Length: 353
Image 1 (spheres, rainbow, N blue to C red):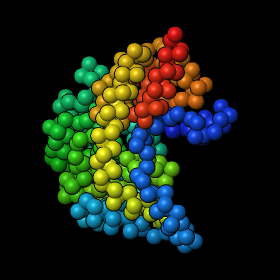
Image 2 (cartoon, helix red, strand yellow):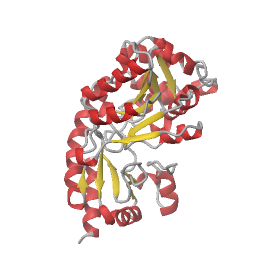
Image 3 (spheres, rainbow, N blue to C red):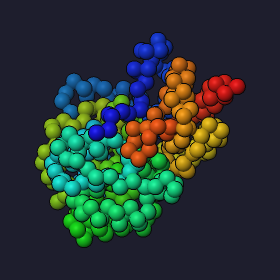
Image 4 (cartoon, rainbow, N blue to C red):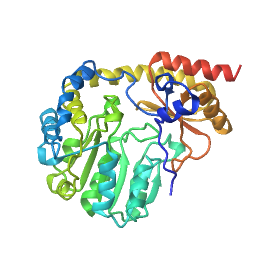
């Protein structure tokens, strides 16, 4: 089993380094470099008195807001405190016998399946193809006769979008074989690609995971939703724990879903900053072309030293060596504001002077 490791350990680092948490520069967690939408803090403060009461038992207000914003039927939407509870529910409740993960991939898919007593098979995109998933991976996955496939668009940690024909081929395989297709779109809002949530709402055994925490920079509030055909969502909805979201997460969701212009602008800002980060990193390793708000880099034997030296300066990067299909030497850097990228560049240069 892969080691359970995530980025974003800002508070742990602050304690270890003896510095305020807000002095830590976090390139390890892939959060919107534009920060939170203007007005969110005031909205939460104004609605804080709600916390004297229990929140909506089924988070119905958020479901309605998502339905209104997307045009999806409410019965196709399942709220959650981030996508991790959804991933765990899928592994536990759908109980696949022959799950397959298309990688390199977020470790939580394997963690969830393992916790549910399932052993997944892995089909990995090839480095020689720039880690882009191709029709060959579809063919290899189909040969395993899976009853559930986890994949992501864009993929984490590579940042690669799934080509449309490849995603369509996965869906065609699912439709023909009865295999569940679970598509994680946690970072889709940072790309020019459109979500497949509308397709999921009318396609049985196709589930799409949507995150609000990344694009609206609220990971501390844990907020996401799942979309699927109502008949596919029902077995999960029937087992949803009461009060899946707290009052402040609900209010944040209601506010953020009204901020479409912010989300659209964030994609353009991220694209510009990604180019700036690419320029800062290119002297130190081989970069994988990314469509997302993070960049994967092969730093070779220098990787551990880079992690350690940057950490001492209060700069966190993601050791990507535990992503199956990668290994030692791989690092992942989140796209951050220009001032933080400049600080990263200067820190890297000082170690190589």
